[in-house]
Image (cartoon, rainbow, N blue to C red):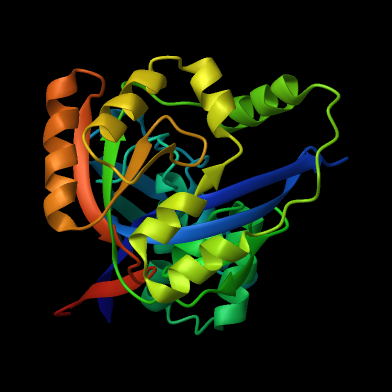
Length: 306
């Protein structure tokens, strides 16, 4: 009998986030190029008398522990499909910044889904898991898949992308979070009545990913939500400037922010940018990592001795 299952699941950065016009359902069509990076949450599930969520790690106090948590919602969704109760204790060991534009909540949803499937032996197909992920949220399917992918629709319709190498990144974590719906609403406000084209992936960016050329990728990265994030959090401009001055090839807001992302030429350059950001006084914490990395992966299984 399986006593617990642990799944490791990565953060993401959007190397392109092209946002189309507002849809009647309140969402936006996207051309969203995801890259999974090596900052991880670990989600452990074990049998319990009722559904319960706990969390440890940096910013754990900001994580909801009720049924609004995407990890809890994932367990409930899988249990409902397979006619069982979601009686599990979900523990999240959190290392991905909370409300930081790096899909930490989505990662926890994908991690809990994969862990519950393994714990319960439901044998869900990859297609079923991705279907549940899409129901949970726009970024959750990519958290399951990882690597690099183009997301269309709300971002949930994924096409895997070829990458020719590993890219070095520095992430500057801001104080507090930003609400994703608020950032999209600010994006719409800033655009006003200006016609918005349908979003399309950048051919130059996709080519840079294929070749693994950091300089070419830096020239092509873009984020349509960045003006809105900076509008809501003007202090991000100083963080972006500090990273650029330190030699980053590209500086951008990660997703809806407020975490900022800096692409560098390699590991040594990343450490230099990180040191400069730490001493700049413009951010709360700095993380150095690389990508792409795999998506949600079972990394530990414990068996009951009973």
